[in-house]
Length: 163
Image 1 (cartoon, rainbow, N blue to C red):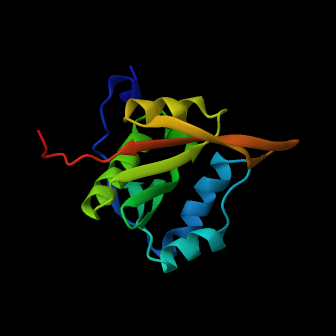
Image 2 (image 1 turned 135 degrees about the vertical axis):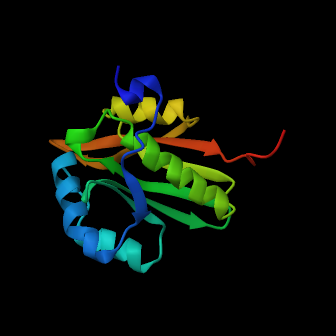
Image 3 (image 1 turned 180 degrees about the horizontal axis):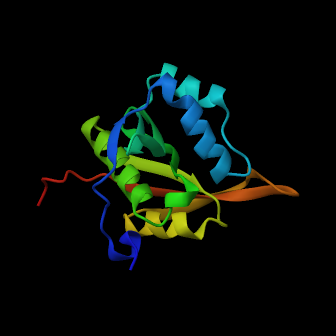
Protein backbone atom coordinates (compact mmCIF):
# COMPACT_ATOMS: atom_id res chain seq x y z
CA UNK A 1 0.00 0.00 0.00
CA UNK A 2 1.37 3.43 -0.86
CA UNK A 3 1.98 6.04 1.82
CA UNK A 4 -0.75 8.18 0.26
CA UNK A 5 -3.29 5.36 0.40
CA UNK A 6 -2.32 4.58 3.98
CA UNK A 7 -2.73 8.24 4.95
CA UNK A 8 0.79 8.43 6.36
CA UNK A 9 3.35 11.10 5.69
CA UNK A 10 6.93 10.16 4.81
CA UNK A 11 9.33 11.39 7.49
CA UNK A 12 12.60 10.99 5.62
CA UNK A 13 12.27 14.26 3.71
CA UNK A 14 12.79 17.65 5.36
CA UNK A 15 10.95 20.91 4.80
CA UNK A 16 12.69 24.26 4.64
CA UNK A 17 11.94 27.70 3.20
CA UNK A 18 12.55 28.06 -0.52
CA UNK A 19 15.49 30.25 -1.52
CA UNK A 20 16.32 31.88 -4.82
CA UNK A 21 19.22 29.45 -5.28
CA UNK A 22 16.66 26.59 -5.27
CA UNK A 23 15.02 27.84 -8.44
CA UNK A 24 17.01 25.67 -10.88
CA UNK A 25 15.92 22.51 -9.05
CA UNK A 26 12.35 23.80 -8.57
CA UNK A 27 12.08 24.63 -12.28
CA UNK A 28 13.42 21.21 -13.26
CA UNK A 29 10.63 19.57 -11.25
CA UNK A 30 8.01 22.05 -12.50
CA UNK A 31 8.95 21.36 -16.12
CA UNK A 32 8.80 17.58 -15.65
CA UNK A 33 5.48 17.76 -13.81
CA UNK A 34 3.43 20.13 -15.96
CA UNK A 35 2.88 20.72 -19.66
CA UNK A 36 2.44 24.45 -18.91
CA UNK A 37 4.96 25.14 -16.12
CA UNK A 38 5.49 28.29 -14.13
CA UNK A 39 8.47 30.35 -15.21
CA UNK A 40 11.53 31.26 -13.18
CA UNK A 41 10.16 34.82 -13.08
CA UNK A 42 6.93 33.70 -11.41
CA UNK A 43 8.79 31.79 -8.68
CA UNK A 44 11.27 34.64 -8.24
CA UNK A 45 8.44 37.19 -7.95
CA UNK A 46 6.74 35.03 -5.29
CA UNK A 47 9.96 34.89 -3.27
CA UNK A 48 10.56 38.63 -3.64
CA UNK A 49 6.97 39.32 -2.55
CA UNK A 50 7.77 37.26 0.57
CA UNK A 51 5.09 34.64 -0.13
CA UNK A 52 5.55 31.60 2.09
CA UNK A 53 7.35 29.09 -0.14
CA UNK A 54 8.77 25.76 0.97
CA UNK A 55 10.84 23.00 -0.52
CA UNK A 56 10.90 19.34 0.43
CA UNK A 57 14.34 17.82 0.35
CA UNK A 58 15.50 14.20 0.64
CA UNK A 59 19.12 13.08 0.60
CA UNK A 60 20.18 16.58 -0.50
CA UNK A 61 17.83 16.59 -3.50
CA UNK A 62 14.69 18.69 -3.91
CA UNK A 63 11.66 16.47 -4.41
CA UNK A 64 8.83 19.00 -4.05
CA UNK A 65 7.79 22.54 -3.29
CA UNK A 66 4.80 24.66 -2.36
CA UNK A 67 3.90 28.35 -2.59
CA UNK A 68 1.19 30.22 -0.67
CA UNK A 69 -0.12 33.77 -0.65
CA UNK A 70 -1.80 35.34 2.35
CA UNK A 71 -3.79 38.56 2.44
CA UNK A 72 -5.91 39.70 5.37
CA UNK A 73 -7.67 36.58 6.66
CA UNK A 74 -7.48 34.56 3.43
CA UNK A 75 -4.76 32.35 2.02
CA UNK A 76 -4.39 30.93 -1.47
CA UNK A 77 -2.44 27.82 -2.42
CA UNK A 78 -0.60 28.90 -5.55
CA UNK A 79 1.46 25.80 -6.29
CA UNK A 80 2.02 22.40 -4.69
CA UNK A 81 4.16 19.90 -6.56
CA UNK A 82 5.99 16.67 -5.84
CA UNK A 83 8.48 15.51 -8.44
CA UNK A 84 6.81 13.03 -10.81
CA UNK A 85 9.12 10.21 -9.71
CA UNK A 86 7.99 10.52 -6.05
CA UNK A 87 4.28 11.22 -6.59
CA UNK A 88 2.00 8.90 -4.68
CA UNK A 89 4.36 8.71 -1.69
CA UNK A 90 2.57 11.35 0.42
CA UNK A 91 4.91 14.27 -0.29
CA UNK A 92 2.14 16.44 -1.76
CA UNK A 93 0.06 15.83 1.36
CA UNK A 94 3.01 16.83 3.55
CA UNK A 95 3.56 20.03 1.58
CA UNK A 96 -0.15 20.89 1.68
CA UNK A 97 -0.29 20.33 5.45
CA UNK A 98 2.74 22.59 5.88
CA UNK A 99 0.92 25.35 3.97
CA UNK A 100 -2.16 24.84 6.16
CA UNK A 101 -0.01 25.27 9.26
CA UNK A 102 1.60 28.45 7.89
CA UNK A 103 -1.79 29.89 6.90
CA UNK A 104 -3.24 29.19 10.35
CA UNK A 105 -0.15 30.62 12.02
CA UNK A 106 -0.55 33.85 10.10
CA UNK A 107 -4.22 34.21 11.00
CA UNK A 108 -5.89 33.06 7.80
CA UNK A 109 -9.45 31.86 8.28
CA UNK A 110 -10.00 30.48 4.77
CA UNK A 111 -7.77 28.72 2.29
CA UNK A 112 -8.49 28.64 -1.45
CA UNK A 113 -6.98 26.86 -4.43
CA UNK A 114 -7.65 26.07 -8.06
CA UNK A 115 -7.12 22.65 -9.60
CA UNK A 116 -7.56 21.23 -13.08
CA UNK A 117 -10.57 18.88 -13.37
CA UNK A 118 -8.21 16.49 -15.17
CA UNK A 119 -5.97 16.23 -12.07
CA UNK A 120 -7.87 13.47 -10.26
CA UNK A 121 -5.05 12.70 -7.82
CA UNK A 122 -4.84 16.31 -6.62
CA UNK A 123 -8.62 16.60 -6.32
CA UNK A 124 -8.69 13.42 -4.20
CA UNK A 125 -5.93 14.80 -1.97
CA UNK A 126 -7.70 18.12 -1.50
CA UNK A 127 -11.01 16.43 -0.65
CA UNK A 128 -9.24 14.11 1.80
CA UNK A 129 -7.64 17.12 3.51
CA UNK A 130 -10.98 18.91 3.95
CA UNK A 131 -11.37 21.11 0.87
CA UNK A 132 -14.76 21.49 -0.82
CA UNK A 133 -15.56 22.58 -4.36
CA UNK A 134 -17.09 26.06 -4.31
CA UNK A 135 -17.09 26.97 -7.99
CA UNK A 136 -15.42 26.91 -11.38
CA UNK A 137 -13.33 29.32 -13.38
CA UNK A 138 -14.08 28.74 -17.06
CA UNK A 139 -11.06 28.43 -19.36
CA UNK A 140 -8.65 29.24 -16.52
CA UNK A 141 -5.72 27.01 -17.47
CA UNK A 142 -3.86 26.69 -20.75
CA UNK A 143 -4.32 23.23 -22.23
CA UNK A 144 -3.23 21.39 -25.33
CA UNK A 145 -5.66 22.47 -28.02
CA UNK A 146 -7.33 25.20 -25.97
CA UNK A 147 -8.14 26.00 -22.35
CA UNK A 148 -9.27 23.99 -19.32
CA UNK A 149 -11.58 25.11 -16.53
CA UNK A 150 -10.41 25.31 -12.94
CA UNK A 151 -12.26 23.83 -10.02
CA UNK A 152 -12.15 26.34 -7.15
CA UNK A 153 -11.88 24.68 -3.76
CA UNK A 154 -11.83 26.14 -0.26
CA UNK A 155 -11.66 25.15 3.36
CA UNK A 156 -12.31 26.97 6.58
CA UNK A 157 -9.28 27.08 8.85
CA UNK A 158 -10.78 26.48 12.23
CA UNK A 159 -8.75 26.98 15.36
CA UNK A 160 -7.21 23.56 16.04
CA UNK A 161 -7.58 24.17 19.79
CA UNK A 162 -11.31 24.88 19.57
CA UNK A 163 -13.67 22.21 20.98
